[in-house]
Every structure is written in structure tokens, then in C-alpha cells.
Length: 100
Image (cartoon, rainbow, N blue to C red):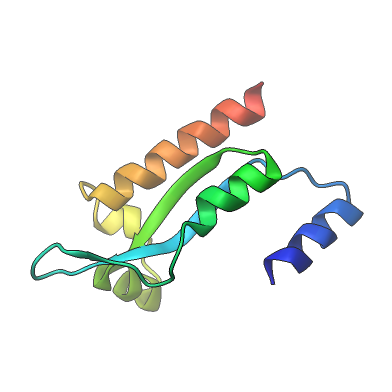
């Protein structure tokens, strides 16, 4: 799927600013233990292959699923969470990239 997206972006001359790895791991809400959902470091290796920055690695938590299902933006509902800080950092990196 990712390769098809890249081919489509090239056809319409759309530059790729960076890579965001979604569901990089799962964080257990009970013990805070990280578990890999998908093996390997797909986001990091893809950003190296494309020669673009890895903008963020967003891990999966039950709160993201609940927020998505309810239609309420995660960053508004969980303003002080580590994931909100990751989204904020990613937005700042994108802002820097497009202002260059």
C-alpha cells in the first residue's frame, strides 16, 4: 500500500515531507509496558530510504481508539498526554519544514 501511495505522489509531483509511523507499538494502560504490534522499525527505515525525516512514532493506546470512535480529537481530550506532546512536536517539525 505504501509503495502505491509513493508512486501516486510522484506522478502528481507531491513532495514527501517526512514519515509518521502509526501504531509503532502498544502501551499497556495497566503496567505501561510497551509491546511491538508490527516487527521492525518500519518508520525509521522508510524515512532513511526516502531520505526524509522521521517526524513521529505514534503508539497505540485505548484512548486513541476511543477518541477516534467518538470523533473527538485526541489532543483536545488528552491535553497533557505524552502522545499529545508527540503530535505537537510533529506539528512543529512540519511547520519548520514548510517554512524553509
